[in-house]
Image 1 (spheres, helix red, strand yellow):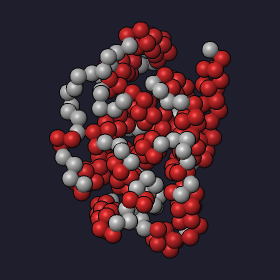
Image 2 (tube, rainbow, N blue to C red):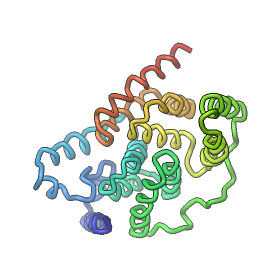
Image 3 (cartoon, rainbow, N blue to C red):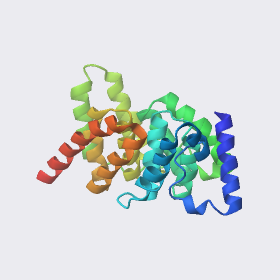
Image 4 (cartoon, helix red, strand yellow):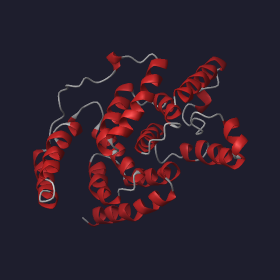
Length: 263
């Protein structure tokens, strides 16, 4: 893995020196820590899809900003523990306007929604990318921060539903969901509520956790994600999480859209 990271950093440095990096700043190669020649040596068709369909196709569609695509992709790659893709996607995200502090919050958030091990594996790679780009601790959020305001009524409604449905099975889970997630993690200001929801929805789709999508997709749309953007997230994730996960998420999203339109 360290070899992959060093190779990615070398490619980045060479691209910057040659003045060629800006041309791909919004899309990347979409071959991760491998060069296009590396991929072509194994599968010319795969390199073709990476270049023509993904980098020069999906990533250039206007229905989702390059910054949002980077956030969605990082969430998917970390959730699925795809370390070979992560260095390129982190560099791409930084060039697309995702701040180091936001990446720090994204990996912290995903520890809870994609699993501790996946977040720790990603942290090792993020550390190397930050070091290569001269990103220091002064650019990252502190552990203790002033929380965003809490919507007490919405939180009380959420807590009541969870207590009723989950409490009999695991009171500890209910308690930690309230105290650690919704009265702590979700109130950290280093990631805007819309972006935190975008990360969560992307992680759920990537992990195939369709039962959790309705609540979090509704929350994302309440936080400012549009229907068109949510639809494009699903389309984008077909490439990074696989078509089956995207197709499993699509009818769930449709039900959310229709219910919101009817209200």
